Amino acid sequence: MWKTFPVFAAMLAAVMFVSGCAQASPAPVAQPAVADPAPVADPANTDDQFESLRGTTVTFYGWGGSSFTNNWLDNVVAPSFYENYGITMQRVPMDIGDILNKLIGERQANVASGDIDVVWINGENFYMALNAGLLYGPITHKVENFERYLDPNDPDNFYDFGTYIGGMQVPYGRAQLVFAGDTTVLDSFPGSAQELLELARANPGQITYVAPPDFTGSAFVRNIIYEIVGFEALFDAPNDVQAIYEVIRPALDFLVELNPYLWQQGQTFPASTSVMNDMFSDGMILMTFSYTPLFVAQRILAGEFPDTTQTFVFDNGNIGNTHYMAVPFNSPNTEGALRLINHIISPEMQITKYDAQNWGDFPVFDVNRLSAEQMAAFEAVDNGIGILTAGELQDRRLPEVQAYKIPIIDQLWIDHVLMQ
Image (cartoon, rainbow, N blue to C red; front, side):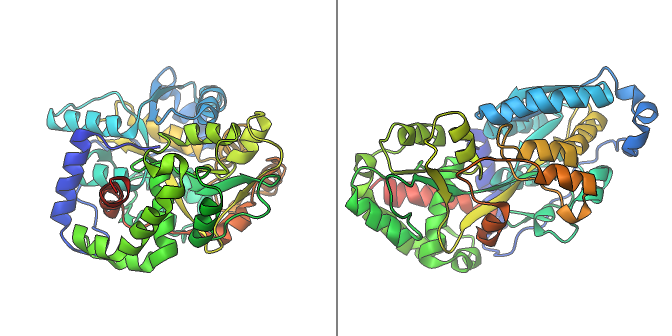
């Protein structure tokens, strides 16, 4: 989902160098002084309080590679946002690396008012943006639905890939790496990395994965690392290339052992999850995966996967994380940006997002804070077949390591697995 581009990569490397070998997540740096927008009022007073925003535009920048996500933003969020506030939401598809490079250039050129109001962000990209002073905030206390509907004790509201959020971004949705296979082709699904290797040996050329640094491919590699050496070992490793290599070497060796049995003998890998899904649809491979937990239901509904496709995860669990929305330091419409963020995390919008026919992304609200009517609407969503429930996934949801370790892991995979 997210890509790393040259300027971004160089600055991230500098940030990583400065962080040294500290194991704890770094505290956010002091943000540049920016004008504080007017406090966000109660939505019940929308007509009076937000009249000045009517006729304005809020730009939403983020990855545009999913037709489901794009459709939900364009045809559900944008019309309802305009109906409620008279504000136009303009979606601008752009990879996060390009977004950050753009903001870096504007920061260096002291551009006071840019083009981006809201950015879809998380993980290593948030870590980079935060430490490079690219974000406006804190903002969470200015978004009333954050206080109203989100769990104040949820760690995901305070940490993103081990980085302290400090109110600088607002949860957008919850994702988890899930696998998928056809029950008419496989009698059972692999429940561990070792069982995956055994499946690949028995079916050479019919297993593959997306190459890091693709967002989902990178998560798959980390999931294998968790299986082989454990999350704690990786989390506790010093922020040093050699130290991390020594910790994850058994997992990298495992992936090298897996290579000869992969599609194209591991000499090449699918460029994206979309390509891998197409390969699965065409019967070229036995399983596929996605960071959208309900993607199987979507593909079945679209007629792209057979009805016998089923989602599964490893017995020890799969990596999950939360993705977020932030406001750049030079947003031209900060008040409108906060209003859009507030609208997107409302139960009404989050419930439509949960519907697999729209997106199939898990909501961020605390169900205990929903009204009876809102809870009924949430429970009424029918997401079809072939999926695991939110409860089943939550029970096997594994945490993320620190953001600054991910580029190191990706590069170690390139050096010690891809190049073997």
